[in-house]
Amino acid sequence: MLNPNILLVRSATYSKLYVSFVCAALLAFLSSCSADLSIQRESYLTEESIIATHYSIVFVIHGDGDYLYHDTNGNKYKADEVTLAKAKRVAQQNPHAEVFIFYQKPRKHFLFFLPLKDGEFYYYRNGYLIVNELYWRDQEESNFNIEVGFYHRFRANKQNEIANVFLYFGHEIPEFGGAGYDASYPDRKFTVHDLANGLKNLKQDSTRFDLMILSTCFGGTPYTIGTLGPFAKYIIASPENLHLSYFDLQLLEQLDLNLIEGEIPAFAKRFANLAFNRLTKDVQTAVSVALYDVDRVQEFINSVYKIYDHTLTTLRGDTRTHLTTVEHCDCADIPEYSLPTISDGVYVLYRPANFGRLKNKQNHSGWECWREIIP
Image (cartoon, rainbow, N blue to C red; front, side, top):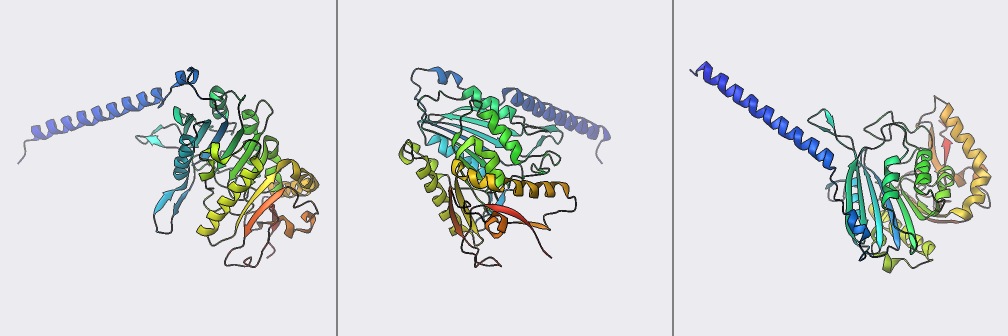
């Protein structure tokens, strides 16, 4: 029979070890918070040997949701992490670019009760990682204050700039409502209007991004393009379900070879075609990618604004309306939207689904609308 005194000694020893472990872990946690990752080489930015930047690229990667998918071999991937890796590769492969990457992560806790920072910022210049910091994302209103602060703090001189590009990766951005977009903050709202406010703060000099890429489902609506249009000259989006919400980024690598000054429209078409070709190989459902010349599509947007706004107002105010009673559809399938200007300024790539009730639909206007489902 064991001596009770020995048991008490062992118990006390284990308790001390546990307390020591917790204290050490807590100290490490607090140290990591204060250190903030901070691979900061800001002195590099002032050296005479710095190479001028010709391209500025901003990535916003929303990872606070269900982005798990399986490839054709059954391998599991987290699409947001895959996209982050691709964004880093773009940054490393462009010696004449500056690249901002904002990665919005799920909220996690240390030792179950201490919250960890849920945003991570990367700044690359001339192919090198200059800054890597953790930060707190907005807990309530989506105002992008932290992201805007990082952007203006490190933004390079625009004197020699050929192009600046903005990319957003995530789920379908709601046009109304917006609660539950972030899995970590179910009461927090995020809508197209909130994204527009963030872009407005980024572009404080009233200039526009040369190209905006919305890697989300159902981004090609009159409201979305109309609301984000003041901040971009060209927008690539999908009026359909985009499947995992991720475009191919290969063409953004080595921009010195892939993008010639003044050829943004041609580059954007190549990007759209590359994305479309990849998607049609990977999925059996409908695939559509559209390129919008923002200035040219304004006439159509203005013509249908009141109709579309009335639809959104009805959806916002009708508490009985759910996604089971309304659905997305091609705007051209609604008579009020089938105007002579519907195709002006829109380059559309479309392939119907290989199955289902719309498998014989051979064309798409490039614009997505809402319609009520008739029982």
